Length: 378
Image (cartoon, rainbow, N blue to C red; front, side, top):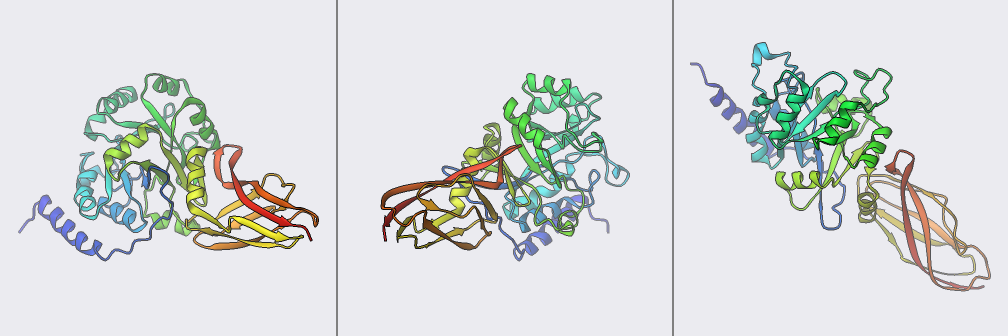
């Protein structure tokens, strides 16, 4: 007896949801910040409904197991190499994934990739209502339709060698056009295993949002783990509540950062809060006599291993020139007075550069560490 597509889909969903109850989930430990929850998201990936290798439900399962909060499935509008077997309904991948995402609590955002030559290149549209309607003769018509649907549109992999053979991102008149008419929300500063420093500079200059996404076509474990990369790139979205609507609001307000490998890229406002909510330093007071060393402990509750470099010495205390605070661990370092005869009762601030928190192409986040100091001379 033949089964309808709907009955097969229902059976698959019920089977997967039963298995999902025992799904092993590895949380991504990036802290919430002041006034906002930090959601871990991937807004660019493909399934068998374009040129990907995976069924849509497996994209949900992958994301859940890796501790993500939200994904967007963004199959190509123009490139459907499997349509002889799967048809050309560009909404189907999200429709298949939706029941599983709903049942398991993953936020699923409908999207599509407008796949054109450079310029303007590939553009992702997320929060689309009907991906089929984006199939237009010209890229301008496709982008206009996405905008009509209320989509958020960003430029994918600006430095991708498939369109920029030398790997150098270039800004074209077409990008000025879609920026000027309010269509372009932002750009991927990181895509797959690449990141584009020049694109971060553009985002700062032009007031654009930033993202980092996997652009995955194969299983995530194939694309990253086998290369020795611990996790896919993610977009960190700072939301008021855990919902698709709040993600949309945060994106429009450009409250995002990028988490790739052991780096976070973004505005210093967000990165400083991630650091201060990750790292606790005790004791906050340095009390000693003469030049005796005082042990100080830095405890790191995040998945980032912070690499710090002292910006300049202080005249009162000697701090290490470099510090490494391992992910999920604590480290002890020594602090001592700079001279035997000091008599101090006050506070001292030392500034460190967090080398793997990037706020501009050539600049890392600087964080002040302040200690109450009481030094008695020998």
